[in-house]
Image 1 (tube, rainbow, N blue to C red):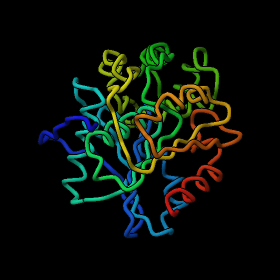
Image 2: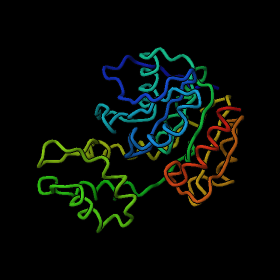
Image 3: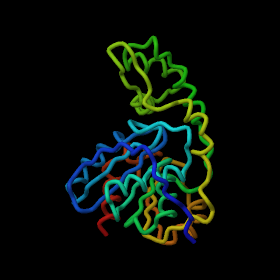
Length: 267
């Protein structure tokens, strides 16, 4: 059973980077607190395989518009408006984490638009995360006093221990002028709508097309038990595991991630 979804004409169009001139369209949706830049390395690895790759910034992320309205149906509609605007009729879709849920929502709303679907380290189920503490740590940075990214990293180091994760978060910093920074994301909106990020997708979500779920070996977002529970939603799905990777599979083991992705897309 397909979801009943509508695509309202939105005022704002999602920002994107388009890499490659191939005939096969591939759209990528980043995860929570991420942006299109997180997928540059992936796009550069595969664009010469016949792809035109659209790396999107989702609403309230990257360089796209901010809105107090934020849920997965809206993210799905944002993507539909983007593809309509660019006259993209059929494409393959990759979504990571929050972007994976947005991609699954889109697949249930507009299944005929998708050639193949790749979902990275997420399922359409409820997840309770530590995002609230992460967002509060970002909000605690005094943007009026820092003068460099190094200072911002030092300010964040007491609450976020992993240097690689701090670097990921601080890609959201944007320099306004020589002496002032701001965040690309609206932390207040994101924090207020955090429950929308965590919630499960509709139980009647259904996509009958070919679907690949990719999990990181060291991630606990997907296991054999919860993967079996979504077979009714994605009957033509398969699961592969990428070794030496956690939740950010495409960043932690890019070569194996590219291998699995191309194997599926080209089959």
